[in-house]
Length: 327
Image 1: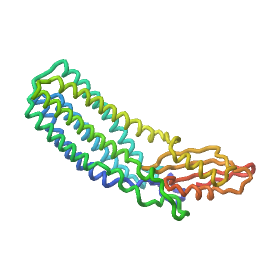
Image 2: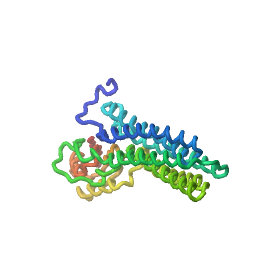
Image 3: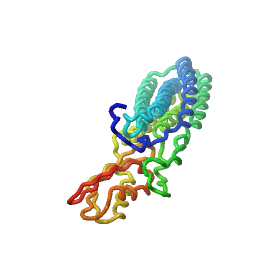
Image 4: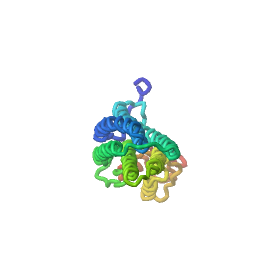
């Protein structure tokens, strides 16, 4: 590309290898969810079940969220070698996870409003038909949850070849290699939330049919709305933290400080920036005051290479008489 024609680099800036297994499973889950969504919305409207209708609309949002997750995986892979993305395309997936979380919050609000309205304006419910559809919907949710469960943990244990070209055998940071795929987690959370609302709908329908507790349909719709809102808020916080590079409280920062201290306790860290560039992968910029010590940037970088979750390091060495930098 013209704007990078003079840049000579011997390494890639794609730090996350993606999750093709999760991508494939999410596509299957999207199709299953779309088919079931039509049945639930139609069934809830036709049989006058607010819990079932809310579950159907909720499922429609999940289909959109699953489709968004699949699209994010495709775009991240498509542009993985595009040098305009200076730290890779992984955050496309995080952005999709954030968008899914926002959508989930909107759905929770919609569910709550509709359930409160139905609580004060009850209608007759065709229980047998509504229960049948809700049970089928729950079965679909279980299938989708099984498909998506643990997909995010694959492909994190291989290909540790990013930027530590000069190191030998190193230990692995177990926490870094078991971090969640937030895009996959968002998709999984949508499915789990839908499964919970399906369970609540079934409970409400059985209670209404056998005990005459028609009000429970709307009450459990409200309960489901609160649960979904709680889960979506947790996902919003998690994805926002990554999108805004709020990683300075991560244990990897302390690990970097310990490595520098072990190298020579007289070295002073004058500036440090750490941010996430992949699942359990971090980039680091360090500025060090080494006084009169004979420490080079390459030595610092080699010392940091024992932590393989640190995949891109830029070091600036400051002394009273010289300034040395290495990337």
